[in-house]
Image (cartoon, rainbow, N blue to C red; front, side, top):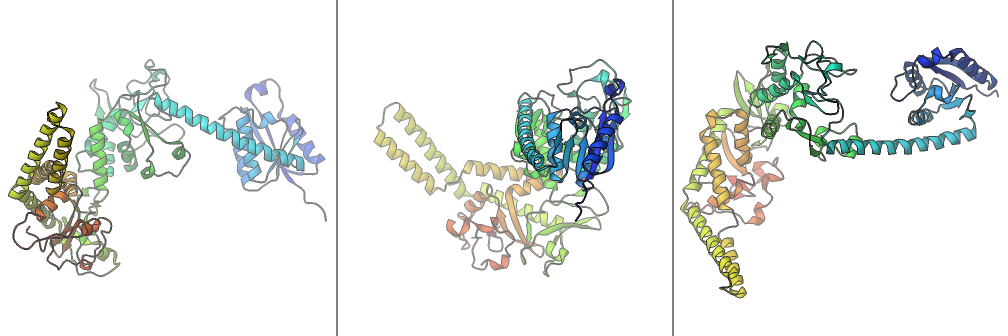
Length: 565
């Protein structure tokens, strides 16, 4: 049986200087054809890059097409006249040979007598592939170390983020340079190794944060405002804003919601320089939510946004993550209880919806038709005001509870006595045994008064009360933040709250009041029945809890049907 011929292709190349010096593409082609003929191979094509260098990072269209055809399995071997026609640097050569090996394509160099189609040649190709892997892995690690060192020094790696440039005004090639930047063509301001503020693009960053911090705009709202905005500098220079893009990747154009989001999440604008771990740098599929190992260094670039404004923007982003958008509009309708409101019948979440310009909360299971439930739509304003009334009552009862005030006073007296005991022990007026007795007495007294920081608890109650009083003057996102400070989960049946799960910070207020609520037979379970609660299982239907025993707190859940509120 006749052996099937190998399908071969040739590759030839000369640089511009080599063309001038008389190096011939024809001579390379002759050697390639002769070699294929002597080995009885079928030469199906010769790829040519004329006038192009083989140095690192050079782009050669024919070589790129050759590698694509190799991946597609169109040939079995590549023939070159000399290795330097293929690559002039080791890293590129080893990488290409390893890639060809992965496609089951061999490589031949006529002048160096390298033939990877023979058994020994295949073994050599395998060894070169291993060397390439070692070399590239070491190169990658060295690159990572170099980038991390630049980050330590406060220097940015990669393209300059929106709002900055490298200050090379005289030789600027940035898309937002000529006919856009008023400093284009002026003398260079830096050596190009550090970033400075771009006079126009920096205004984009400031406007994005300013408008978003108003708490009434979505990413798309901000993008639309930017696309219609013309900035005027103090010297009278005016230009309509546009997205910058990056040379070779994207062109200048209109702003999008992604542009706005990417600006809002960049801590870089606070003057900090983030650096990702080597694990994250090596993954192309790392999600932004998974970036937990980010190191922050002090950058050498000027800040555009304060740390406080940046943090506030992240809080608004988190709160808006639970919101629904008004149908037919881009504006966001805020639902402060979304994410923490549950149906008291089936345990499903209640979702914010709008109809006729009004806000409602509706059972998500009913909306998604995953199950039937008797819970209907409830006016959002009514539920929110009802919850405010409950929280206001809790705060009022706490601040006016004589029992709580007495406990607070006794705790302060016990602390004052202990401070005096410490002073006497330090001056030597009492013995160590007496000091230890007083210390034990103090611990027992505090334990008997509850292990709750009454001062912090009272301060939290006061803070929430102030926020409730200013409800009508508060931004929607701040309202949501206020309610989430106190309530982790709230349960409704019909249009009435039947149970609340306080947050860890707010729980002490409930515990204090549950122990000082006076008449009515209100009592609590011990800590052994409260430690889990709905915190670990908020989707558990309320009807499965024994809420009909006359108890005020069950599994950490406040039973409003049995409480004094």
